[in-house]
Length: 363
Image (spheres, one colour):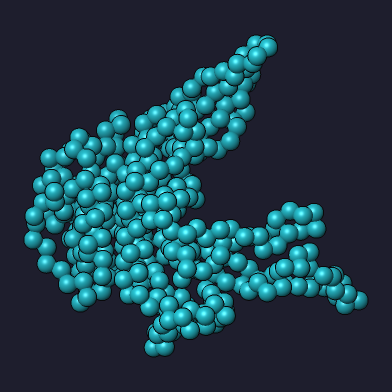
């Protein structure tokens, strides 16, 4: 259960606009995101994504990869209808050259939270300015596609190693042929903790802006949803919003709950890894700052929280913090747990308890 620390806050007075979050996963003995084949003498090695600095190797997972894990998890957990990817255009060879999801943030919560882009597909194009000749588009079904784009309210960093490693160990394996000598292959992996930061622009969830050339939904769909009373038009602020005022909280709550049980990753048969957070920090703000982005670190594979950094951050952003700060972790996770448990203005619990506590603060 959470520590019962008094925390006086008035969300409506201060303005809940932004969710700032950071989390860490235990990736000791993992291969979560591949960089392809690494040419080597006498053998081929599959390597994970990483980069080198003077300190050593920093393994990482791309933002695109773990966003996909989370997207799949929330669709499954919340039983959302998936916004299927559709083909917008093919070239003359029949290859897909343009695609997008359904681009409907009203019907599909994943489009609302993760954003989308579908560029306009022209039905005709000029092949010669001098002669004024025109050529028909390669895909006749594209003539009614409009240019729509929605910047994602949910934003994320890469999952980055909390400390450098000097070498990436190799897992040696063989493919056993029915006839002939077994063929060797190698896979590099890492033994570390990974951390990531994310944010949610809470005000943008469940809202549609069609201003100037920034079109988030085609007008024909807007009119349909207005007629069905699924959205309302806020003329003063210039946007359309979901008529159900509880839907924003439901969608964001589902996303955060899915993060608590997130699953996915590459090479699960060989390096099955839990990618749900071993620790997570959540806070609501009146401004868009990732205030606990450097809270997690490790040394010699012993993870810790920078307590002095957290104290300084709480003081620095006191005028912008509009919810309690929730910190979730399992006992035994951190090297300095006694210091962490003495932190003031922090509500402690397990990762999923912290997520539920924070969701209860959403307006």
